[in-house]
Structures are given as C-alpha cells and as structure tokens.
Image (tube, rainbow over all chains, first blue to last red; front, side, top):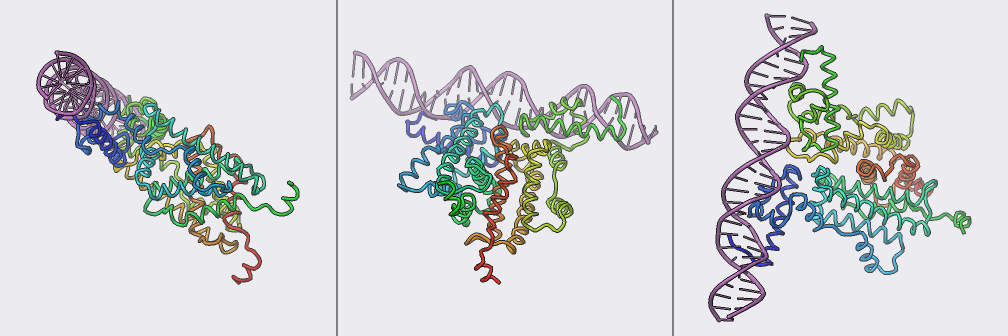
Length: 216
Length: 216
DNA sequence: TCTTACATACATACGCGAATGTATGTATGA
DNA sequence: TCATACATACATTCGCGTATGTATGTAAGA
C-alpha cells in the first residue's frame, strides 16, 4: 500500500487506538496481541510499530487520550458555578466523576482496562506512575477542598479533614470499582446526587449552635 | 527424586501455592511462569502439573485458601457479640473487613493478585465467577442488614436501604482498592472505627421525634 | 511547471526466546 | 508390586522485535 496524507495517517493512529481498546478490553493488556489489534484496525503490525514504540507506549497513548487533570476539572467547575460554596464545589466534583463514569463509554473502557485488565509491572512503569499520580492528585484535591468545607461546616468527632477526604476517596474509588466490574448489577448513576448529598451531609454535619459558640 | 509421604506431598502443595503467590504478586498472573514458580518452591514444573491442572487451577486454589464466606462471618460475629443490635453488627462486619485487610498479609496478597494483578478473561473464568459471587454475596448481606438497621434508625431523605447498602459496598470496595494499590500512602487501619461510626451515623441518622410519631 | 530527491507510511519476512503441555522415566512408600 | 509423587525431556505454539521492501506524498530546484 501507499503512503497516506498527514490527516489520513492521524486517522489510522486513532483507528489503532480504538482497536487496541477493544482488544485489551476483551483479552486484557497482556494477552492482547499486536497482530490482532492490527487486524481489528485493518492494518498490519508494521503500522502499529510506526506509530508507537511498543505495546506499553500504545497503552500510555490510550490513557493519555482520556485523562483529565484534576486541576482542569476544578478550574472548569469554578468557572461554571461562579461563587459556589466549597461544599457545593465538592459535590459537583464528585457528581462530575460519577457522570463521566456513567456516560463516557471511552472513559469507562480505558479505566476498566487500566484498573482491571492490566497487570502493572515494570514494563508498564509509565502507566503505573500515571495511575499513582492520578491517585495522589485526586487525593490532594479532596484534602484541600475538605479543609475549605470544614471551615464552614463541622466535622464528626475525632476526625480531621484529611480523614474525611480519605473516606470520600474510598467512596469514589469504590464507585469506579463496583461500576466497572459489575456494570450489570451496580448502577452508579442511580440516585447519584441524592447519595452524594447524604454522604456529604453525614461527613460534614451542620455545626450545632453551642459548637459554633465554642469555636467563635 | 523419590516419592514422598502424604503429609510431605501436602506440604509441597502448600509450598507451590506460597511460591505462586509471590511470583504472581511480583509479575502478575499472566507473566508469572510455572518454571519460576517451581524454582521458588524448590521443585520442578512436573510437581506443579501433578498437583494442579494448569495455571488457572493454581490461581483458583490460591483464592480458595483465603476465601471466607459471608455466611460464616455473620454467623461468627453473631456468636461473638450475642444480642447485638443490627447497627452494631454491621459496624463489626465492616471493622472485620478492615482489620483483615490491615493485618492478614496472605489475604492482602491474594486480594491484590486477584484484583490488580490479574487480567480476568475466559481462561480464568473460575476466578471471575468466584469474584462475582463474592461481590453478590457481600452485597446481599449488606442489603439484608441495612434493612434491619433501617427499622431502628431512619434513612436519609430519598434513599432506600438498598441505596445505603450500595454506598457502604462502594466504601468498602474503595478501601480495598486504595489500601492495596497505595499501601504506602493510604492507611486503612488509621481511625478505622471512628470513620466507620461516622459513616454509619451519617447514613443511618437517628430518627427525629416527629418522624417517629409519623411512622408509628 | 515539471522533475528529482527524500521522507513518510506503511507491508512483508525472518529469527528468536519464552512458556506451555505432554510423554516418559524413576524411585519410593504402602 | 503397584500406585504415588515427582523429575526430565521434547515438541509446539505464540508473540515480539527488527530488518527490509515499496509506493506515494511533498518540497526544492531548474
């Protein structure tokens, strides 16, 4: 076959990424063969090796295609809901995560691959670091905003803002876990907002009058 | 080498399982080779094929070694804390999970392997079914006990006992996720009991007087 | 504007190692 | 002596990486 123009080559690259998503979702990253990925994309392995160095680079590109930094999310939400209280912002951040998990199929696929169809070892060090970084980033964001919320609401006895952030972190991680692993029986989107509100109300109780008096 | 007595052969079986745990933890299930597992156990692949049909059977045996059915747990707790209120029982169930996750190293290893070092596909269908069964089992237990608790406490507005059970399910799943994936930065055991109490107090608020009057 | 030269975007072919499953050997306990 | 509990040897498969072939897009120069 002949050489393609630049935009066409960009398309084949996308086709390869799509095919890789499908293959890795079906067989897992380890058992996904470049040969079958190529067949799905109607190219040969040569094309894959032209666009990507190896399988792990292919995986990394897949992740990069769907990753959204926390920084951008918060920025975006702050602009979208100007002057929102921290608690409102936190709720919106969580809702955004749930919504994306419920509706963005590509994001679901990629997360499912990275989280559950991938044995992370040294060869996928890049993906491993990226995963850890996303965890740290999310957690840091939660800690920061939990501190802000704690200035307006109170905290359960014996717990710090960091503790609450860790609990929220676990809840969100669990939602991803349950929703991706058991999509037929666990519906994240069901009552999502109500649940989040209930959780946050429980974790950030309204300050009782005497507490307010003590703290002020 | 020569034939061993029955108990000795049982020991080699255990050694093989131990070695498999270590290998699969290091390299992941897919990249774990039976040859290296055999070396770690000071046997040859022949021994492995004698005791297990193939790698997936080996994995299944590993899981079976650490699995504890929910039925047994509840039974055990009911006997241990006789006459406990449902809420107390639920708290103890969750605490038991966290404690095991924090202290039982073999359990941690096996869970980490099955959850994060294993690309579940048709070849590991047995493990996949077992995992799904554990999920369903746990969830059913949570739903049941949530209903019981809901008879004594109240529920957040707009949520059912099933909803609450799903939230608790997500929280527990998230604890496993965070603790196993980021053992250095995420400490499950830190303030575990206080956190669980705060969570349950938030999800099962004390019935307010007028609500009690209305419901009765 | 037409040609030339080079880079691009793949396809094809080859060699390699690694892991698996099986078949067979063998020494020992019961 | 016979089944057990392995060890050893062998064949086969599979996927990867690389080397190489090839046709076309594209830019520079005449």
